[in-house]
Image (tube, rainbow over all chains, first blue to last red; front, side, top):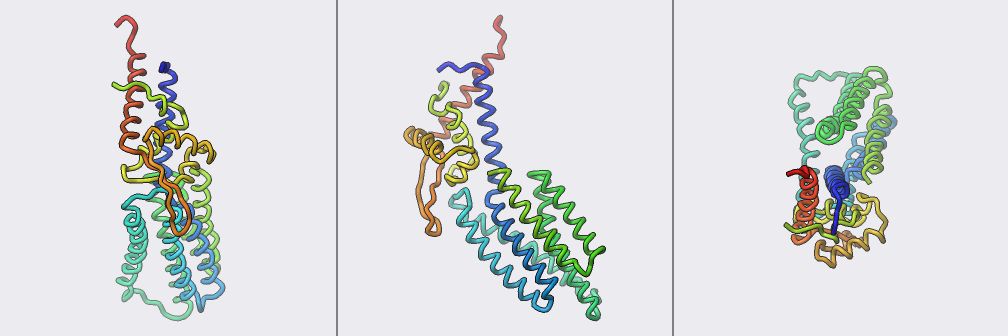
Length: 199
Length: 103
């Protein structure tokens, strides 16, 4: 079979592009559906914090439990690549997120004796700040992923973190509503961008 | 050195093999995901996979995941080696072309 220099060059480019595209897609494998799921959970959770503050704790507990269960189902159903190690990898990803939140709350717990929260107004403020910390954890993950994989995640992570702090300062009374739109919207939007860009 | 592999050289099959060899040896990719990755139709991907399967370059496995039918594809050891040889043959064409005629 005769192949010209140009054809050989084209074929090598095609193979290289396909390999690069595969590597990139695998790095985001299944992330789109999970981001949309957690975006929806955040929208409902923060809306609950805004409009039903008395039951918000229980609502978050129920939403997070549902989210974890649905994440396992989504991972099993839609994981594009399977191998003898898939289950272990999925477990490790879940554990990483769980440990990240656990450690942040542990650090807050360690500082607890020095936190002087008095009265209704201060406790409301404390919970708003706690909401901002919880909301900025995935944005930290965005920034780290952005450094390694795609710059749009880096800038999204930094912008949303800045807007979270801005919301805390400028619209404290509506902060949970702000986070429902900003945080939930960012997760849903990123999921949709990944789906459209790499599928 | 082996020459150009006519089965793999076809552009869609080249992209299929390039994607599959990117995975680790024991990894399998979902048919639907591969279709999206390569931006080809069901029928087109199926036909090219059949050709590669006949050459024993890929393994197609149909299974059920949470009661939903799914098809997973992986490159065989023979397929990986054939792809490597094909890429080497393409590179050697480029190197030959780079050598000036007077040498």
